[in-house]
Figure 1: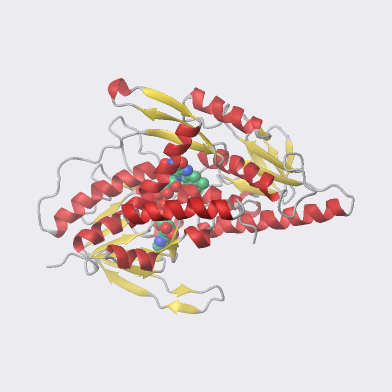
Figure 2 (figure 1 turned 120 degrees about the vertical axis):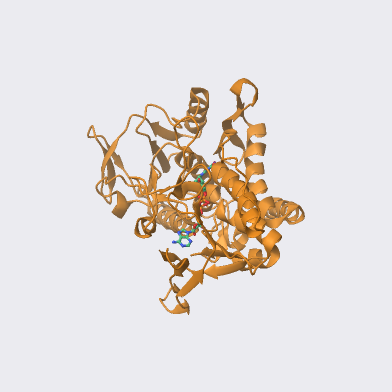
Length: 432
Ligand SMILES: Cc1cc2nc3c(=O)[nH]c(=O)nc-3n(C[C@H](O)[C@H](O)[C@H](O)COP(=O)(O)OP(=O)(O)OC[C@H]3O[C@@H](n4cnc5c(N)ncnc54)[C@H](O)[C@@H]3O)c2cc1C
């Protein structure tokens, strides 16, 4: 009998799983559901926001990936699960005008994998939901980019009329997302000043401020990585404020708990993530923060056929902690489930080993030429600090490794060369 495996969410983890299972089991057995038509690796959304990565060039169509990797693609958002009937409910997919493209569907499954990622957690800060943007989806990053171009145009026009013209961008959250976005925006502002925004001084007129509640940015990483990143941001004239707990956001400014005020034209919320609301409606066990509770075999608690991976899963580690919400964890969990689900599809015994998270370190991009980070060595759990071109090359190779998992080695190589050549023939930032 054929096993029907349905994977919901084609992101860093879910897409790799669908591609690898599809190549083994075929389209009749493997279905991927996603609410979007194309895939962008989420850790590159700060590049989309800054305009240094073009979603129209880089986005990978799920239909193309389904054809090439032999899985079935289903366009639409998961809205519910009939646990007793083992059926997934998928909403109708609509176009921008609200017209129905594909009707609502019900997908029967033998095994279900939920990998719907995460969304912004505003921690009930007044004004945060209304007056900030977050980089949850490609559309959010593209929206940010267009808002920034509009603000740059208005500032340029004010300057041409002899008035002051500034764009003040405040980023809340000094984790990897906030740090990478701040550095990328600074590089983009320098390029913008060469193309049509000639009156704007990229460093003086495009003010970028990064606010962090802890006493250092990149707080979960070693101190050396934080201080190097802070130094690189300062060199790029990004203002970094630590120990700054944001208390209120209005359309014009960000206020912290001590009464400090940061004037802002554009505010990005990168201060935390939470589970998508739909997870709380499925009738599955969730943690207080709404994540699906899974065991070390990635099965959702109390379930025998429903798995969860990546940012949306609360997965315990051997030392009593939790697997962090990172692309490397989603990738590792996908690789683990490839083995488990292939065996189940072939009616073989599943491996008894639990999933064990291996922290290989972290790399943080500081613009297109530099990165900082730490690499974990297996020997004595040592950690190596890396910075500069070597770190940058390693950072880029992580994105390529994801592409390789979904496109194969040859096409990844061709695309990497094509991207390199296109970058040399076009402006560094997308201007339209
Ligand atoms: C700017 C930025 C930089 C980052 N940098 C790093 C980094 O350097 N290193 C690192 O390890 N991590 C980084 N991360 C975190 C990393 O992106 C996530 O941990 C990782 O993408 C999680 O993978 P996932 O498969 O769980 O979810 P995602 O990659 O978020 O994919 C979720 C998928 O589910 C789909 N989906 C959501 N809801 C539904 C629904 N109801 N129905 C159907 N489909 C749905 C979405 O469309 C999406 O395709 C970064 C994140 C951001 C935003």
